[in-house]
Amino acid sequence: MDFFGFGAAADLSTPVGQMIKSGTDSLLLGPDWAKNLEICDVVSSTREGPENALKAIVRRLQDSDQNTVFLALIIFESCFKNCSNFVPVIDKAAMDVMSNIARGDKGDKNAQEALRIIQTWGKAYDNKRGNRC
Image 1 (cartoon, rainbow, N blue to C red):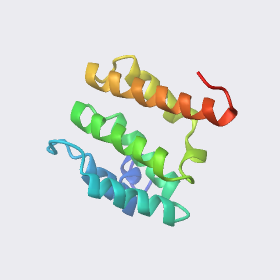
Image 2: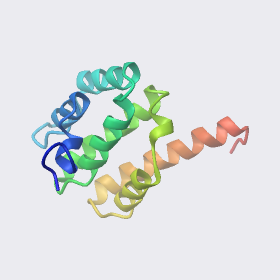
Image 3: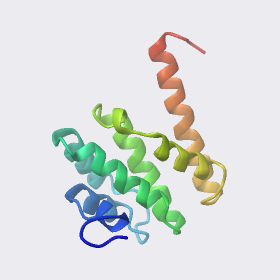
Image 4: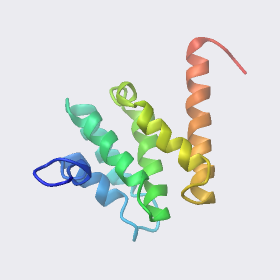
């Protein structure tokens, strides 16, 4: 159900959701880095930014277009690396979507990108715990 502001359509109707929708447009040839940085600024500077961004990113990760999914992965990684208030809102549902992409549900290119991102996150957390590989 996505009317009256509820459901999947609402995920992309917020200001940051609209930015993410624009930054993951399937017609883009590659990441729009200016848009990605603008998204990070909104996520970092607003109270509701991290949660709204995560919902919109997950929505775009579930899209059927492989280019949209790839661009959403890039935005996900950008928010993870640049927005300290984004990391705490990442939930199991978002990681389940990432795991499905890593298994190849959205194409080989996206599977490789999702695996790379997950490995990068794992190394970052391992280093924060003091365990060096």
